[in-house]
Image (cartoon, rainbow, N blue to C red; front, side):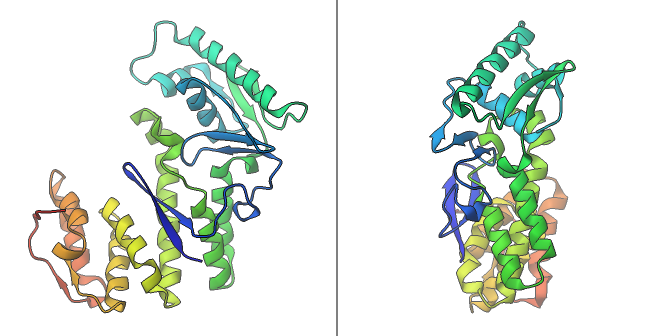
Length: 289
């Protein structure tokens, strides 16, 4: 089972070729509530999808799901929803969105209220088993991979964890400050899980099956030196020259142009010495794509 790339604007996502959303492979059993935040926010219950009409409703649900069973204060929610430019009536608007979302969740679930939106101590919380939220299942699968005693089990757990990702956290709806608070650590954990998976696959001799996946992810994340090194090693084992200008111009260009001097330099250094591979650095500035 190998990774299959799904392109979305500005994001490189990974999924195993035979993954089916909502299957037991993802750790979610059909019929229960499923909340997805590793991509556009979605809620499913017994085959039905929650229908919301406003962007802030989805964003509010996603924020509370990421902080499941914890009270998020009204002030925090206003900051996470509006950032530096809160609406004049932000508090009243938030109360309206909470009421709308609570009604939608109740209608979606019927008598089976597994997920509840609760008003408590100057804020709100989403009360639920964490396992219904894909971000928490992702963390659990990564932990399972760390404890695995065989490469096969480790690869399976990492594949299943990465399969949960469908794009940026909350579909890229978060304001920059909110994304830094809620999304960056998850996206960094995703890249680390992919690096662990690539190490395991390369170690088992599966470099040909994953080399293009590594190239795509390395190009989108030029500061991940481990990922760049994995790209070089996989290319080398495939019998292909590791030529910076021909292999990863986007990665090196992104590291060298418009950034501080450390970023580009680090990318070029690791490309020059990782595993003593034959790397040819043509220039620190590249043309073409």
